[in-house]
Amino acid sequence: MLEIRQQYTFYGVLLYIASTIFVIYLSMGQPEATVWNGLFWVTLLFIAVNAVAKSFLQENRGRMLYYYSIAGPVEFMLAKLLYNLLLMLVMSSLSLLLFGFFLGQPFDGWLRFLAITLLGGLSISLVFTLLAAIASKANQNAALMAILGFPLIVPQLLLLVRLSRVAFGEIFRDNALLQLVLLLVALDGMIVVLSLILFPFLWKD
Image 1 (tube, rainbow, N blue to C red):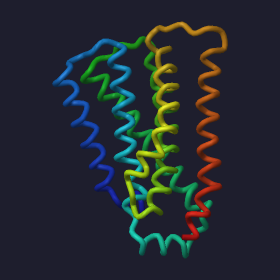
Image 2 (cartoon, rainbow, N blue to C red):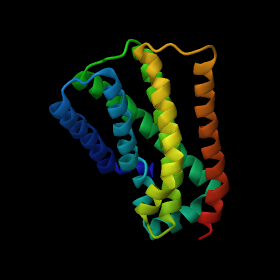
Image 3 (spheres, rainbow, N blue to C red):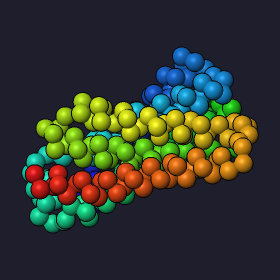
């Protein structure tokens, strides 16, 4: 409820999405499929940094003390993960709609790409929620989040780019598509488990 009340953050991210995609459209028009795919996931990455990471970095010490008095670390982290997950699903869907409107739709399977986009938004939100939680306990050091995030987010982005090619007509070998999806889900599960294990130690500080 407290997150939802901070509507200026939500509208700020919406403005960021619209302006970023419009600038890409002005500079590139309607690019080919490979470029379109790469631009989409890079844009989604920066949207996550602006939307998800701020959920921890904007919290001051007084508010964290208030949270400490009304909730436990596991409940608090689960709430953050769930809120950021829902927020990123909305942002991912909106980004896909704006990309399709301004930059065209170079893929064949709209529903398949939408499903991959939602899965990607979920994965990225989980990673940056964990990183933002760690950075918030390190004197709000956003640079730390970037350093820690690189080895975590790069494998996920590579998987998402590879997985999204199925919507552009690429044919995968038997069970290859399922293996990519299961690997991505396994990485997401690992992030959730790490979040619930590590955050109680940060919570004590």
